[in-house]
Length: 88
Image (cartoon, rainbow, N blue to C red; front, side, top):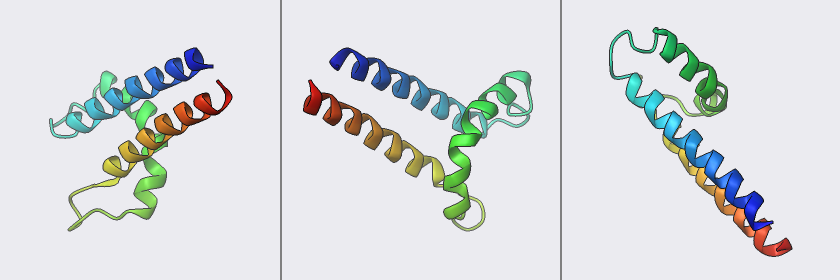
């Protein structure tokens, strides 16, 4: 069970890094409209969209929904390990 938990946690960690790269890409003009940017958008936007629906940007400019998304990913990782400890 711990092996499965480690694999899932590693996938979540990789996805977290993909989110970080996508967020940093938003600071560079025209990078999100490139082919690489569109791939990252397809990977990240479905996860970020529910958070953006409920969390409005601060001052209409600063989007804090990725911070909440990272918090949810960390909670998911922690939950996976807790389940692995319960059944392992």
